[in-house]
Length: 286
Image (cartoon, rainbow, N blue to C red; front, side, top):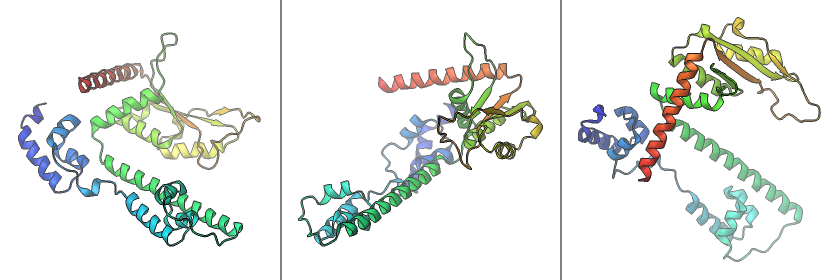
């Protein structure tokens, strides 16, 4: 806590940055404040800048929907115009008079289809917008953040030692290249040498095995000699696989040689995270 000794001076800087329009994440990175409780106290009473707030478009949509309804448009036509769901439109305009129907069932069906397609398109764009904004909130990762993230990632997806089956070795398995990329970055942070790594592919026999092997060699940048023999999963003709197509590369196994010591530290780190989180949660409840 020594770096927070001059709390008032730090708060003055934080408030000034907030009033300049910086986000919590930007202030945290600028001042190197990695404690959320401290950051909350530094920014206490300060309003978030408008650009960080999600705009509330529902009121404008509601008003526009009512205008269109008064002009005689049906739910389908309003949906086509605004892209919102018909259930929302119903709530917004149900007190207004219904327009006279002047279309054939085929015309009404075509309009409904176009309206639903527009709704789906707008939902997809909303998903992409939220994901873009969320990704921007992360910013840069400190070494400590990557360290903690890697411990949790390993404990979620890595092999664990059991009393009935000793597995004190660091082995990580995943099909998501992004997960593999983060895990390898974490190993580099820990000082694990590239020569300590061995890779293995597990993939369905009906997939493009050669293409998947090439993909993982290119992705990891590892010498092909450090890849073990590929394990093929037998195909059951009675089942329909959904993990198929051009983006299916099987599961990559990442093994760290002579990693008993590393595994024991990982288990200890995880216990430390659990203990710290439990203590923090208990403090928040009291």
